Length: 142
Length: 341
Image: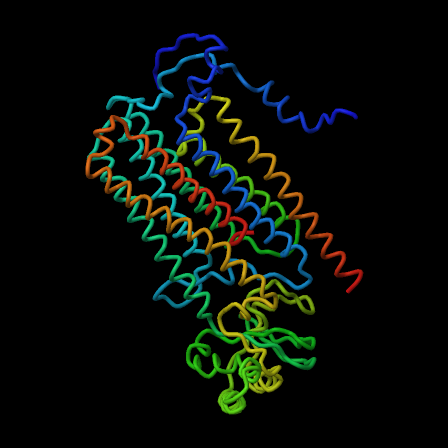
């Protein structure tokens, strides 16, 4: 019975990246956390900034989708990759700022983010490789 | 966010009296629910990816299929979907402003921003209803030809090319033609289905066959929605007119006409999975938006009544906010994988 290291890998990563903020009582995480008008003003400013950013990214995506021709060349592959990166940037801003996961404790943050990250990679792999295999099967066996 | 910090021992922290995540039970469970829900959507998009990459036929491209705006003629590729995305992002912003107002115990602010979020949600649902209706209704329709055929096709610049189409090639009508002969074409979709049910089917089939044989489209587009190339030419830009259009029309495979989309047929692709995935993925997301709006309305009423004021905190707004942002998050991925790529 060998120990399967790859199962432990996420936990190892977690241990390395985790700062021990769990030993600190920080009232800003509390149920009844409040802030005053001045702090609110600053938070709102940040939120408006993110709004503008998300809008601009969406406009860029639409512009790229319309402007660049799909002709199976390297350019389109690069565009596709850009779409994926822009989507992940958008998703990151929504999760970390709007859902303020960025302000939560690190252990909650990684409990949520690690399954997401692992499964996104897994699903991309399944989607692409299984699909290509299915198509190869079609081509070989009709 | 300022807060006083003080060290506690590990035993005390993980001893069970308080949450090691420093969030309430409800909020933590909302996060866990969202993780699992993301896997559901991930599964759907993955299935879409597998079917798409595994398809031996060409797949329709988003900016060709989704290019209409309500009340306007012409081509506005992806504009409507971009508008829907924008509506959802803005409603996410109003939601996060409601959460922020809750942290200041500002009841008026919460009621205002949450109210705007609900309105944004309704706008999104209405846009989706229009998009579905347009997708189902179709623009022009298409059919398969039942023999190989060489036709003269012209591009925008007026150059004419001889294009050889294979047996079973898929060609499309213009949306003007489709809307003019809407009823006859919709009837022409179903001769086979009518026969299966027996009875008056034969009569209906004969009638519709007569109907579409009397009309001839002036223009036929050689494949509107996919990136098919023939003899080095992009078929989306080539139009067949006059006698050759008549020839194509006469070679229509009986019962192959598809106008718009339903659960059995669609004009956008040979693969029915394309339409089915559109219905299922956007429908499942739309259902999430719909339940989100309902939940938001309930919480809005509670906020108006002052329930949270009495409770001493507005954490409930945060919890439904998480759900609402998640709906926005999913749409970001649907937008990329279904419409853009």
